[in-house]
Amino acid sequence: MSIADEKNTQIEQLAAQTQAVILKTLQHQRDAGTLPGDANLNQKIDKEDLEVLELLLSKSELAEALLQQMDPRTLALFDINQDGKIDVLDLIELYKTALLDMEQLALTDELTGLYNRRALKDMLKTRIYAAQRYKHPLCGVAIDIDYFKQINDRYGHDIGDLTLQHLATLMRQHSRISDIVARTGGEEFMLILDHTPPAGAQTFAEKLRKRVEDSPLIIPAHTISLTISAGIATLHPDSDMDVLLKAADLALYTAKNQGRNQVVLAPIEHTPHLATPRSTQASYPPA
Image 1 (tube, rainbow, N blue to C red):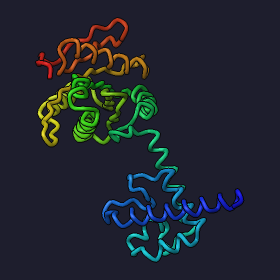
Image 2 (cartoon, rainbow, N blue to C red):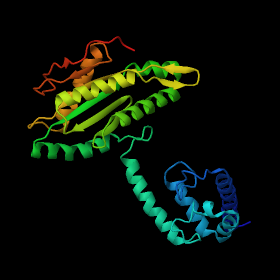
Image 3 (spheres, one colour):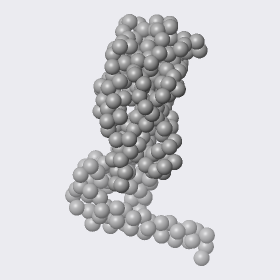
Image 4 (cartoon, rainbow, N blue to C red):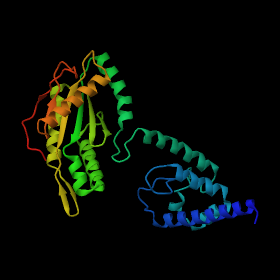
């Protein structure tokens, strides 16, 4: 067998294997919540989905076999433009969707679905410019899960991931549409509260702290109590993004050093390297 023949045989085997995988996936897909073009059913359009459709288009017999076994609802998984067939126009539409998804993925924390640090900084620059130009208040709230390492060590990293997702859900539910909610790394999160003075941010953070304390993570065989520490910083006319974030972090560290499960407001001077934040919440016992 020549090298060319061997390569063609490998391609045919790959096509057959891919067909079997696709058909099995389609047979088990759910009718509800299926994203058009999402061949691997991971709720996003990615490289694997593009490769599947490209293979379909390059192997006409594969596409024909799939079409024969698809009911109308299943056909919609690949028939992106809904013209009743799988063709190059579907691939073009899928590429467009993939570009949007990839752009969103670059700005989103994969585990929690919140904004990531890059997205936070990109959006915060614009918010700070508007707040300083139009003279409206803006606050940043740095948040950290208390004793998160102990949760990981005791229950494992899978439960640790569920803990992060649980807090992310509570933060989304507690926030306004205009708020920026981000995971900045590990067990650390950041909220940007636009049009919010320090007193309003303090009230917001305290309500969130109490809600987390009252909302344990409940999973089979375990109920895991959670608490958070929070540090608040206020944007001032001569501040920039780095100053704001550093001041919020400093206030957060103070909250943790003072016993955790509390909210600390950075001083009005807003000078992170000199500041001594003050607690705005009575001391609570650590989780």
